Amino acid sequence: MRALVTGATGYIGSRLVAALLAEGHEVVVGSRNPERLGDFGWIDDVTPVLLDAGDPETVHSAFGVGGPVDVVYYLVHGIGQPGYREADNAAAANVAEAAKAAGVKRIVYLGGFVPDADQLSEHLRGRAEVAEALTLDGGPEVVWLGAAIIIGAGSTSFEMLRAVGDRFLLIPMPPWANNALDPISISDVIYYLIAAADSERVPPGSYDIKGPETTTYGDLLLTYARVSGLRRSGVPVPDVNMDLVSQVAALFVPVPRALAADLVQSLDYPMTATNDGLAGLVPDPPGGPVGIEDAIKLSLSGHRRLPVDQLADPHHLADTDPEWAGGDVTRIRTLASAVTPAVTHPALGLLCAVPGPVAGWVRTGLDTVIGLAPKGLS
Image (tube, rainbow, N blue to C red; front, side, top):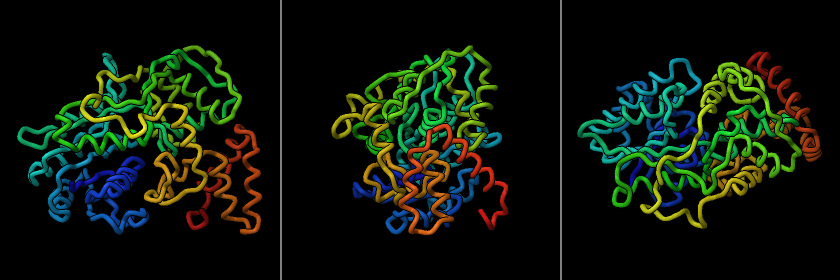
């Protein structure tokens, strides 16, 4: 098939492009900053186009420049930015209108679970609204895949999980830590995204995709610690306002503050699948869906950033993933190697022996100094 991937420079989009190319598909990649596409290892194998989903003119132009496509992957989101909910809805409508005019048959949208609750966070409400904005009379059929936490190095939710597990000897467990959760590995997400483009197998509609195990937020944190070889314990704490939790969390994780704050708001709800997903429509991923412990092990096993199309496994960290991803020790080693002679770099491996909480404070201090330094020095 020939696919247009929006959000191709993002965590999921960059890996999806690599997987599509590996399966022999033709790929058009859209970005509002085409120059950044040159950072990705697959750039010579794709058709790049300027596409700012918030600008109808560039969206329509992208379909003209990119040529006919069979499916559009919609992976755009503005979470963590002011007014992102309205902006996301407008962007989705722009892409849907342009896709309709271009004769595109199908849009595959990756959103999230939407719990059955009267009061939802901005993040959760926005997921369903984007799916509605993508659906037009006479327009492309829409397949909406919903997912909860995605496990993989570089994933925002996994990096938040990593930061808490690494930095806290005693992990706070408020009541919402007992909320049920259906996480999924990044490799399974990519597999289902590609499968969802097959109109002969997958009818249009909403499908929740998940891994083989249900857990809780608290148990997922403790599982991460155990797999990482860390001794951690959970400590029950009283329930507190989620606005306060989101602001405090933003201070203790390396994820951009606004993004972390918006995501934490969603922890107050169970995140479990409400349907059977693509079961019965497509076969399981080769080797079966990846379990929680295996996904975490894979996410921790990539010790060097590589181009996204050269990763031995999509769970590994890519050189185009955010610089704040990869954990505290990895960040410290990267900063240290930039200011020390190459002959000393092997010794930086000793940083792995630094206790997690200490590494967290050191890394935070270094990042703060860099943030305050003149741009030419950072």
